[in-house]
Amino acid sequence: MNPGLLVVVSGPAGVGKGTIVRKMMENDPKFVYSISATSRLPRATETEGRNYYFKTREQFEEMIKNEELIEWVEYCGNYYGTPRSLVCSEIEKGNVVILEIEVDGALNVKRMFPDCILCFIIPPDFSELEKRLRGRGTDTEESITKRLSRAKEEFKLIKEYDYLILNDSIENAAQRFFSIVQAEQMRTNRNKELINKFENI
Amino acid sequence: MNPGLLVVVSGPAGVGKGTIVRKMMENDPKFVYSISATSRLPRATETEGRNYYFKTREQFEEMIKNEELIEWVEYCGNYYGTPRSLVCSEIEKGNVVILEIEVDGALNVKRMFPDCILCFIIPPDFSELEKRLRGRGTDTEESITKRLSRAKEEFKLIKEYDYLILNDSIENAAQRFFSIVQAEQMRTNRNKELINKFENI
Image (cartoon, rainbow over all chains, first blue to last red):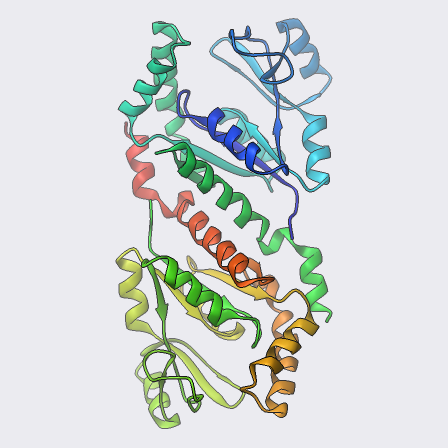
């Protein structure tokens, strides 16, 4: 009754994806975070193997060539991608693998894993997003402008997602996210063995 | 972000449908129970307009003729059906209408309202179901045998449902049910206005 699941989470920079996902992980050991590989430089607070696997552009291109990534994109001048091995083994174990990736990557994953679910986190409104992004204090003005303009592009693709999660507070958003995962695990098409058992009583 | 929803709940006699649904209603005023019409006689604990609208066979057949029911079936020798008017007006108001009906009726509703969700409540196992049915003390031995054999028939159709809800305890089952409703209200295809707003920022 608790089948493994691949959950893709997207949302504009500053919407609180990371915080919501961390909140989820604290509450349930079944949630496994899939750490991305990237060619961008680490922020001061980020560490190798916890936030990202940091690679040079050359190393990243080698991984692409060897098909070690289930998806990858170039975004704001840097590569981002999802290493294949962890994702597959954790789903098999019945865990819920969370991928935090941007829109193009998410849609690529859906094509490769049609059973995955795509969740997009939305802010209460656009001005709130701008406020959070500035408040974070980790981005240059140029980077903020770029990210806000990118957010508008991403919003054009949210109808391709399965679910919208409103982040009006971290607690509410994490609870909504949890409901989605729990509901998806109860879907009949994810519980064929159980159905088989009841059909043959 | 909280669109109206039609939720159909089925499950074998004795599985605890009524108790779970009542638990849901206590927790949220947005949940509205759609009271069925039936031609069966009231049990000692049942009252008109609260558990069912009790009708004679002749009255029920008149309602069928006048298309006042969105679905109806004959089950164990009695008619059961869902009056149309309440269902439609409550969904329009943004409420969650719960229909507690048996399998054939549920599949008919899905054909007429493809946006509805079908939930089937399952017991931990079949012997547990038999135990609960006997424990209820409201049915004759003949009726119990009939209901158990009917349950086996119903189990053959659970793959037509959207969700399976395990009733290992009323609290757990009600919480699972709530997650399903909450998740469905976050589905992108139920939030076209909101998506439209974000697409045009």
